[in-house]
Length: 587
Image 1 (spheres, rainbow, N blue to C red):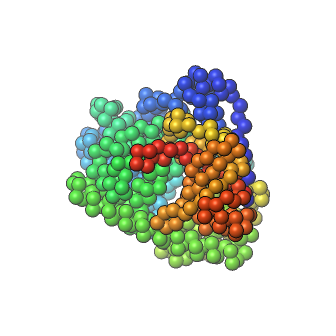
Image 2: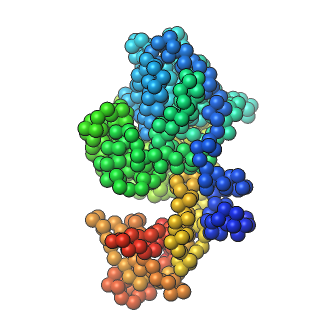
Image 3: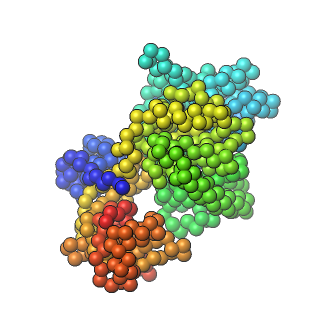
């Protein structure tokens, strides 16, 4: 059962509304997102590229740019080593295009998820060295590769790290000491003493910032770096970064450029997904385009996604985009099968009693472990690790809940892993088979989570009767976009709506369209895109079979719902009507 709360943050909403020419409702929504003070509100509503921080403030950025300039002038071979996810692919593309623009002798290598695992390793360093690379430039990885970078340095190579992940550390007498690789230069806003004000950039955004510095030292107009902005935006959404501060500006500006992209690969990917005429939002990146880019790194090689972005002809781009779309459909089917197997295991074993779920699916494709972990977390609202049988050892991915910092908890038992890394909300690991059960036991013994932590919390922005909804309010809500992690879609609520009628729609019968009426007599369409089967069962359990039958026969009935919702405008044959999209319901 969910717990619903109303956000109770205080401010003078009428004063804010008057000052920024918005409604008091929108003023309240902005305050609920912890945006306070005139300057912050202005940037949140109207922030532009001029509000981005100077990239030279990022520790190591100008130093790295200077080293790259020297290598370019000396015609030394530079090898970019990226990562196989959407962030790594876009970061690799950004650096590759920028270095080519600067006249560099450059190529790129992306690790194979199955063969190499995450990040730079000794084989990749050897490979670069044997192919005559003088310099390795990492992106979206490298900050935790202490031993690997030491090895590269022992071969006499220049190694430059650009990354955004958390740093490794060790603790002694309660004091935490950060451990940095011995690279020639490091660009990561999370490293100690980095004065860069915004720490939440993704790997591709860090790479883009470096490009701005590189263009500066190479005498190339910095304006040209804007040609690569959309790739930093795609990676920011795809890597599920907080859409606050600079990220919000990067994504908003990048989304504006997407419909007019000059990149043949992106243009083709938008076309094969039927989005050529659509207003592309963060949702489309997160749930349509992004998964296609990620699918190649999961089921094949991420080099295919990079090849899409590097396509020279429209024919090549359409071919690759179509292949990625098909691959993503295959990935969806495999994910569903793995998820169903995992739920079966949890429901029929002692796992269900655990506070931290560690599920071993030996036959699951290791690249799907993270997605499956995310789905299980949604179902049980517990931290979840899904482990699979790798070539040499067990590989795994974790997804967490707000009350549990996954990376911190893994640090407490780091001796169990052969490799690990991540964030508070997500992590990856490699572990020997004999340590799997020890890992599960240790996490659960160390856990301080309470039953309260496992209750999903629904935070309502504004309890608002549906008769308050106007086209003006719906259009004004667009000012708050892009929505995503850290800047969630506003949530409104109203209690005890009469449900006048309901019908099931969609090819897969996965949508319910209802007509609802509130106590003021306002009638409005309401759409529900959740689990239709569960919704029907809940209705029957609460109101009985007869009342539910009446509901679907459009007859007078006793069905009432309290709902959280988001208001939208439905356009059908040029007729515009207000409707709500139900997010959660209680009976």
